[in-house]
Amino acid sequence: MTRQNIGFVGTRFSGTDGVSLESSKWARILWDHRHTSHWYSGMSDREPGFSMVVPEAFFGHPEVDDITRQAFGALKRSPDLTTKINDLAAFLKRTLYDFVDQFSIDIMIVENALCIPMHIPLGVALAHFIAETEFPVIAHHHDFYWERDRFKVNAVSDFLEMAFPPRLPTIQHATINSAAQQDLAHRKGVPSLLVPNVLDFERPAPGIDEFNADFRKQIGLKPEDVLVLQPTRVVPRKGIEHAITLLGHLGDPRMKLIVTHASGDEGQEYQNALIEMANRHGVDVRFVDHCIGHTRKLNPDGSKQYSLWDTYPHADFVTYPSLYEGFGNALLEAFYFRKPVLVNRYSIYQTDIEPRGFRVLSMNGFMTKNVGDQVRRVIDDEDYRSKMVDHNYELATKFFSYSVLRRKLRAMICNFTGQDDL
Image 1 (cartoon, rainbow, N blue to C red):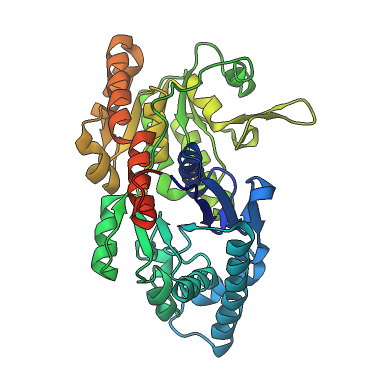
Image 2: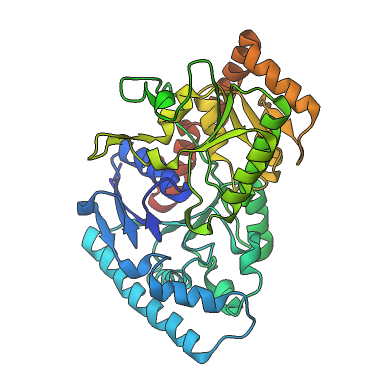
């Protein structure tokens, strides 16, 4: 087996977004097989000695943000916008050459930068670089532009057709759900390998320890309270209003809805609406993003920053009423921590997860009395709950574990190296 230098390329490798988390899992599997990962991005929390940070590669860079604002929401673009895209793409392409040379990259893994046009110049730069070098590339696609309404009206259809993603013979495409796999084949005429999001189910989930033992107390819960965990950002597609409706229907003052993440860059309007709704329904909802971070640590004032995984061991029930998801990491996390979970049957759940036979409490876009009765039973009946979560853990181990990812990566790496091993 020849050790390969793997170059991950994306706009951001930092924090708890899906791209950053999944790329870390891929890198861990590759490292287990002695391949070394290096990182190219505009923002990074990866090891500096193995990374190249180019600020202009971040989708939030002012120059990129200006391009994105002009590119979408209109059908005509100015000559100036074309020049800006091409000039920045040419600059970024040179940095990609530098990245490959500096770290002697053998195989490149592009994380989402060739499918969703958050950074048009980077996509163009990558397309040109791959065409010029015939570089072996795995394009890991999490979201496509045609899946998002915000990108449908645009003045850059020629760039989207050329680079998101490009049709080039040295690119192997990987999609995270079957709908994306089918759409890519239909729209672009290229095949892809279906690589679902995964967790390390072979390794038991962490539990309550000395650091996180006081989490419930720190967020103001009493020992008898029921912690209903909503482990998502506060954005409309997460459907958090359904969780509030559920708790309002149950009418149990012990139940507290704990929302782990902030709204990010999507504003406070939705959160304010949720607070008003919770007040009307008499629901105690608590937004605890102020004490949840990517990693656990002690702050200078002595307070604690907990990780997301510090919250799950304390949860009595998990709500996941999303309207749409590319896959559903929080759902896998609920299975991993053996927690009962309510799922709104979003489309990818119906096609890629539900047929496996998981036992969840489900809703179809709206809350019913029957759903509430099921939630009450799963919280009160320990034996029923234990059988449910144990079944889900065993099933997830078969279909969404690291062993699944290991097999998929082995196939893709072998296509480039000819070696039947990672």
